[in-house]
Length: 254
Ligand code: IPE
Ligand code: IPE
Ligand code: MG
Image 1 (cartoon, rainbow, N blue to C red):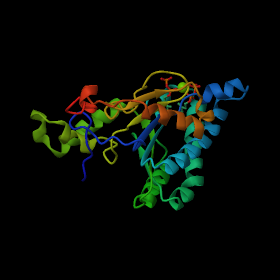
Image 2 (tube, rainbow, N blue to C red):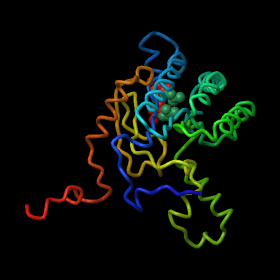
Image 3 (cartoon, helix red, strand yellow):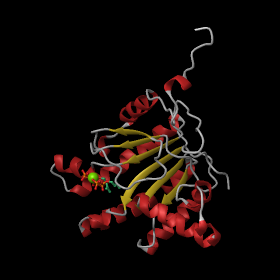
């Protein structure tokens, strides 16, 4: 399996347009509340922002786009909201999968699917295999995902395959077992909804991501909002531990 560069072991290639964008879509409940609507109306409206963000990322040449749809902590929400989110995931995927395939997108889900309804798991696995050979943008949904779960499941699967590594192992041993081993690490992390936290999203993979936080609520996140995030990304100096002078050496005779 091809291994992607790790930002803590090698200096990754930095392009003007991020290769991988990871998004915490937050603020759906508040969007609905502002409109005197039930919280779930915000989730429903959020699907439109997902569709639009994918389309715009394809236009921009982004190769990997990852959304946090449901965290391992979101089970703590009221039962009705959790079951609405599950139904919404099912119906949106069922409705959109043909178009996703026609658009040459590769669809993946990361997270612990064990507690999900068998019908939803089947739909997800079918959608993944239908689109697995597509060559366009890889669109990932993180569902029942937690960054700590990811690291722990990777360690256990690695040790199951290689018990001898219990004596000691390195990053390169572990990385093929992480949930996003098929993608490079995110270059840009976006969180909508105003909170400035990672909420147990891709803890390992975000080691050197550029972090961008916006007050815009997820249902309002449109193409100009994404352009602003990318503009902010392009203004950053990604040093990966080096000094600014090393990145911009003065000419010899200066
Ligand atoms: C994010 O929006 C969607 C999920 C967590 C599924 P929220 O539902 O967290 O919206 P706020 O933060 O309450 O506004
Ligand atoms: C993070 O949003 C999870 C998702 C967007 C799926 P939350 O709204 O659940 O995060 P906290 O609880 O405010 O940190
Ligand atoms: Mg929230």
